[in-house]
Length: 69
Image (tube, rainbow, N blue to C red):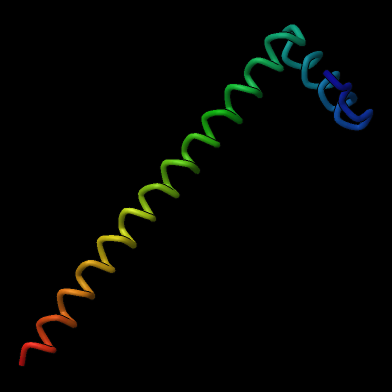
């Protein structure tokens, strides 16, 4: 595991001191928030793909209907 850059470590030091929490708690909360955000982004991307596929199917139906006229 690599170390974090000094400016980030200094910010973490300040927050840990202000909130009177442990480094482990601060890091665990940060990782949890990051994972939550990534899961939301992944779900959004999947929903967008499903929506796009749905529109494509509808577009093909319209084209097929127009061709049948």
